[in-house]
Image (cartoon, rainbow, N blue to C red; front, top):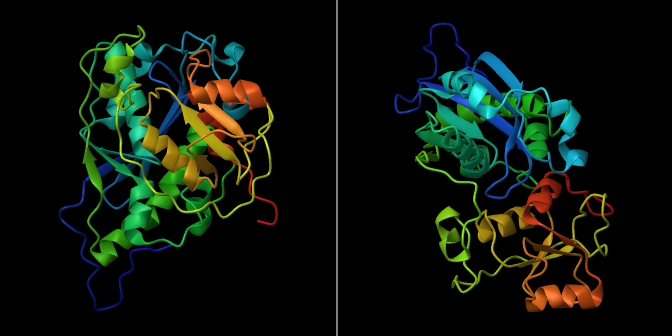
Length: 328
């Protein structure tokens, strides 16, 4: 890892004065990725200006609903039954976040989940800026095979102990962020900081489709430009099987509205090694839709071909643990 070093008779490497004075490295596990999904565990590692760990904190959270894909995060309804509600840990969480830049892997997701939980509790999350370690690794030009946390960790020699456990994921990210931060400082790299605007109102009632665009989704008749994606380098291993992992090369199609921005979901799928398909055929491995009864052409073809179907929340969890292609 990169470390600050002082040579006899020389001064330490100057630290950029424009860099933040502290960071909160965060990971949250959730019931899914959709707009009304909930946080079920959260962890924060507080770091000083140079990335040194000050302390860490972890809590379970009772989501007051089904915990979602237990096979991913391992948290059952029984494990969460006696956990505090988010409103009960909101103050302690806020203390950990206050006056710091929120750092996370795919930070927009963690930030959105946190902002929504605070809005439900009729409070504002004390976060004004976030930094995504995926964006930082791109700024640094790190030679990573993909943008998964495990790849970033491996690059810096950080050992994962419990993947998809909030506390260990936050620890791993904190240890990988420190050398990334120091490399950025040494190279004069401007940190990719983004503004965070807290939500001030929230309702868990279903959002009408024509209004969902305000949350990053696309309405049924919304227009968005097509994007040419690079060809998937992996062969199609066939269809997804329920209860198993996705595998690199699988062809994934999307249908209908999504709570997380569609392009973000597609980008994440591509980065995980999946083939994002614009249409559905007999070769499609999986259809992702929040409305399997919508009657769209893709849903109709999925029924015709027997294509497996999952919702956005389950797909988001599956993306966290994609099996490498054969031979990788």
